[in-house]
Length: 147
Image 1 (tube, rainbow, N blue to C red):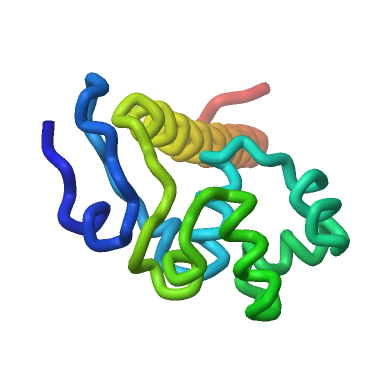
Image 2: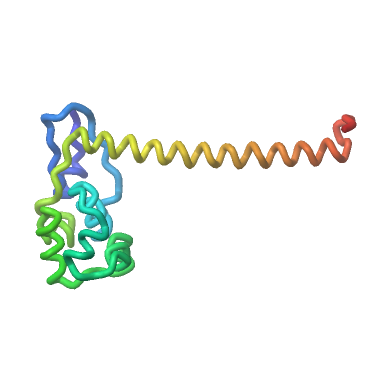
């Protein structure tokens, strides 16, 4: 199994006893990305962490999308809830979440499936556009075909 140096340097600990490969992405490059990743891996729903912290779910979403940041005192509480170090949440160094190779593989496959769905949707839009253009050309009898 290959462990990317990016995963090691980002403070994410990988369980190399599990089968499968690790594919890393850029979701943990920001505080919000790290918060979202840690919450997902810990299996803590958005509403649950919001209730624990006494903030609105929209506030957590703003943090996870880097539109806002929690106060330092809340960072310590968030880190405790999610089982990561506050330093990892803030900078990406330190004790991050533990990801088994199986979890990483499932996440990577989910990401690939989402990208494939986007490509498929774009393909369907292009086919529909070509069909409309072809129908317009047929109506104007440019190909010598009559309806």
